[in-house]
Length: 88
Image 1 (spheres, rainbow, N blue to C red):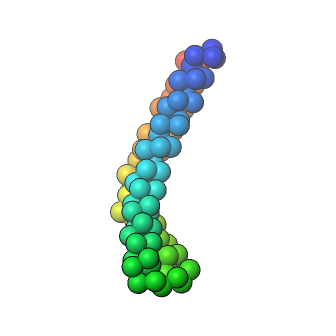
Image 2 (cartoon, rainbow, N blue to C red):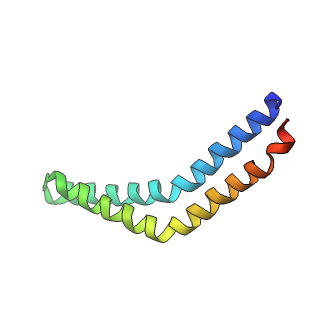
């Protein structure tokens, strides 16, 4: 395996990781921002108020995007495994 192939594998792996994690992180960020704005407006500073909505959001996003995330991960894994003979 040459250095170029290793770098291509690493770059593709990082790109797939960004694609898989992006929906979860972005939606959770948006919910966290909305909860923070709500806390500032109402002056309620309860820690569970910011934790519970984010936790529920993570669960809902994983239920909604989980099959797509798994499909992306399996596709990447299958392409790497099928390409092993060509690496050497």
